[in-house]
Length: 347
Image (cartoon, helix red, strand yellow):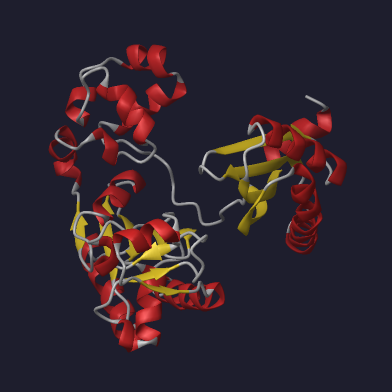
């Protein structure tokens, strides 16, 4: 029996909540991400996107594109609370829920007698009526196709890829629409004359594996619309991180070393309060330079060690050849059960 998977994706979630809370924002271009020109947009509503504003864009760039942009600060407590309300709506239909973030999730509704499209329509209606927010949805026999489909009729729409239509749907789909194919991946495929999934289907699996390794084998399956992953009810966190974007660029290594202990303390507190049963796999330091180029330094270790973090910071700093730094981040990578067992055995 074919599965019925729904991917629900809230439309401009943070911005939509801010508009609901403050109706004066409606009809105006809104960016969520803080009032500082040195910040980064977390999201932008559709009015702002018409000007080219988008998530992860520096605020100063967004304001250049849209001088009338209304900036509002991020309120994660409010967004988490709203996400919990929406999760409770999902639970009326299924317990098989895989959250991807505060504003999107996969739902497996294969056990229900109604069609996937009927269930998605009802979920979206309840979100709209009870929470005053719009959601889009994709319905398909697997997670990959459902995620692609949820973007098809945005905003406030839904699209279904039925099992009988998978082959026809994939043939003309741009490879860039496959989850996991980023800008560089698309460019590498374009150099081979590959623009669509139909183009990609002409290559044998061994040829893709020879050129791209494990990723190539995955592409062979995905360009045919195949994805056997289950909806994972328990999401295993892979890392714990904290970062800060400076109001003024840090010009010296000594300045960054002074900022480091606070971030380490925050990560340590989170680990100790929620994840102390999980083994640490490695420590990571991330820097973003004034020109927005990034670098990370990582070392395998099972403990939180400020001296190691300092050494990693020094390594990352010297890669920048003295360039000013706008962002500093630290994180702990956590081992899953299999990796933890290997660490215990010393493998």
